[in-house]
Length: 182
Image (cartoon, rainbow, N blue to C red):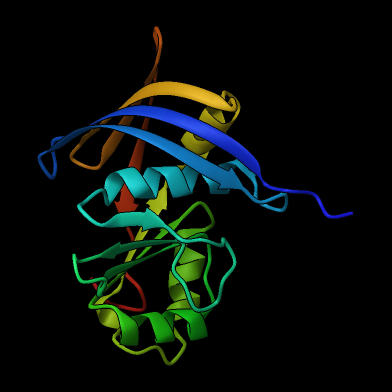
């Protein structure tokens, strides 16, 4: 018998001064049995960092033809394809043909991923954005993961501050150029 997804509920007060987004969020996120805690939290962070009207998680985590997170306009047209982890070149090639903006948030070795992707033939690879989540910070955050969580996420100059009660975890998210792009 296959294991089912585990549902996590996040109540997040988002304060992103970089983009001028101040929004309370309540997210119900399904964690696939094969998904790590770090991957789950990277998905949640990517959702927050890209929060905009029309943003939504995809129906399935490992659907080759769907982004992990999508931003669509009011007519349903895909505006932003957001992927998590270390997606394959073929997936990103297809994404670049479907969406004007492709963004990757990784909890993996971002420099190695950027080098691998830069060596592949990917449509508009120079326009893709790759962001590395601070792996030590993410591991510390994952150690505090609970099925129901409330926290404040403050973003200032790509520095992340997660306030869990009296405790604040500070980390950085940095953009990594893909194969010589900036």
